[in-house]
View 1 (cartoon, one colour):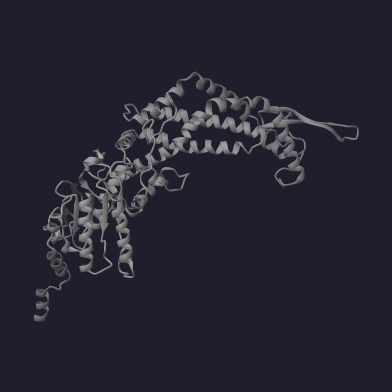
View 2: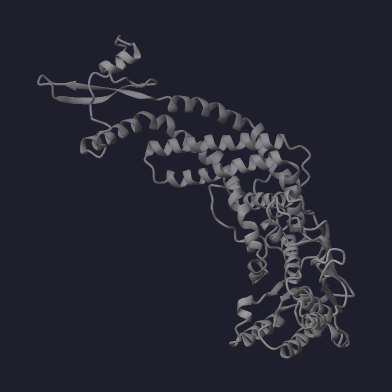
Length: 537
């Protein structure tokens, strides 16, 4: 078996770097969506992944990852084994770095520690795979094959046996017996290590002997300390003695332990290299699995999407919702996530989404973008079912609401950004806009928006344009007459007819702008009818 493979890319695949901008990851809060799971998965590594490195437009790569995610969700024992192995990968890597700076004997001991950790990794992963039969994904089957090949090999069995012997002989050293020859004046003339012992010597004082009920001399009782250890370890005599002892131990054990270095180099290193190389892959995959489980625990669906070709430009989703909002909910919250169906099709590749303030327009727009991003990260998407094509680029324009109130040249900056986008967007791109051109008057904003939407239609891009500019919906017939992909309407339902509360449902219908205003006026009691009643009172 070839021992070079990835858990994120099919065997032999070279990741391209086609995407030049990944601002959409931050704009859609996907980085925050991933943050809690990245930290929770590995307590020893508090950092956030750069998700842009995992983004792909290749169906082959997306399928490869989706299959692995599905396997991991179905085999929690394997997830546990991988989680426990990751800190060991980190420790092996750190040991290698420390080994280069260590003294000879310490260097050799590091080599033994590396072998011990390698054995622990193989044992744990083998057990995890044994408890996870029926794996279907190409990546995990290849990984399982590598672990099985190592575990059943004679080299590994011999390594375990010899490591146990060497570990016992090294780890059981508790003390050394030092001999010092004296001259007639009792001056030391020669000193050396006489014996290496598996038992610690005892202090020899009266209290120690009474507590131990041990009054016989068996050769492991100290008559008097050679150096006052524990009082001042920085003392020059203590430092000199420690160095002398280290040199003596180097001499005693270097020949025996040195033989381990070729083993580490020839057998262990290239195998641990593979394990270390998989660290980031495993972190990403376990993070994704934890995210999916966390959302499912809230009672919300996460589905494995059906992959369509980019040329098909498909996005058909049932039960779509915004997972960022969902994950901010408490598990005991009474809030209810609204699921919506949505698709781009021949009758609507561009949608003008209108509705009342706080009616769900922005939440829905973000949900569409998040689903597309998670899909192209190779992950499950927040919906009951989904058929999605990769896009070549994702463009977002989400002006901050506080910035929208500042009319100091922001319109010009926004128009410049959109002009740049129009130079780069293609018929395979996804464009998401939320309250674009909100820094100018409704008349100006409507005119500019009409021009941009019509241009996107001629390009053939998919677009969701969430806006408060209700007059745009009266211009779609005019815009469609120019040609290009069809422009259609979406409307955020004002209220549930039964409860009278906002439903947050997104309907594919031409909205009645006056009904929004009428409902708002009724809510605050400022309709003419309300005013007349007040006058009468």
